[in-house]
Image 1 (cartoon, rainbow, N blue to C red):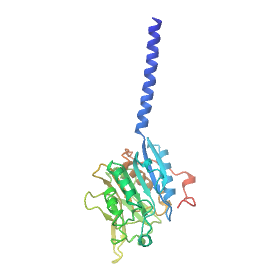
Image 2 (cartoon, helix red, strand yellow):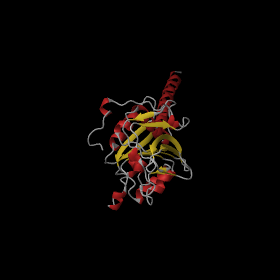
Image 3 (cartoon, rainbow, N blue to C red):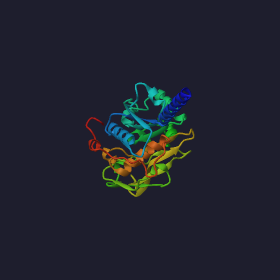
Image 4 (spheres, one colour):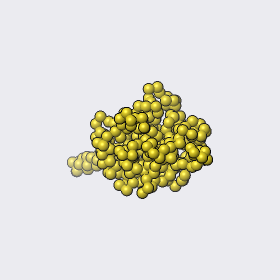
Length: 292
């Protein structure tokens, strides 16, 4: 009788342990990885990525996320293979760089583009911020149109971003999209917003954020889309934002919430009904020297 009771007790204990380990394993499996790629330059690329990482990993409204930050391209690109989303906040390529034979710091070779393209076709999400959007028509542009739905065509279509308004009022285009949750119209006192971009003609992205700028020729005010979201045919998601020139943009609660929502959405993580809750600690309220 005592033996039978002992067997039952041990069995129940083992069953309990199995339940705990199974639950732990389930939690581990639910954790998704977001990879941030940045490059040195005249923008707060590294500081911005580190801020986003802090906000996502410490948000009371976000669970099951792990973030990794790399300079331009990881030494071992295999770390990208299990990413749910890749966020690129880097320098781009312009006319002078092209003349000098300098490549885009992240999309700098067909080999890298092919590597990323395979991941996109598996459904990995992508977010591209600010100068990252500058691309050559021949190499990077076709892929950016597929992955996020737009790019900045410095070779022809052009932009009038240098005549941005100060202060600049930015308005959400839609309230139904998950990226639009929990934030509303906001104002930036200093900015440089890339606009007048080339958008994909097929499988067009959903406009998320708009702003008005004076036309370069007529000087008349014209509305432009400066942030957008794309549901790709491969099942993945893409997001682009023309802002990010100044670090203090991310101190703005609404602007920061928009980009954090977008990162979750592209990673296929449920965006909270009120958006990603986050705060900026004192040590991250100003950009650190050497993080450009």
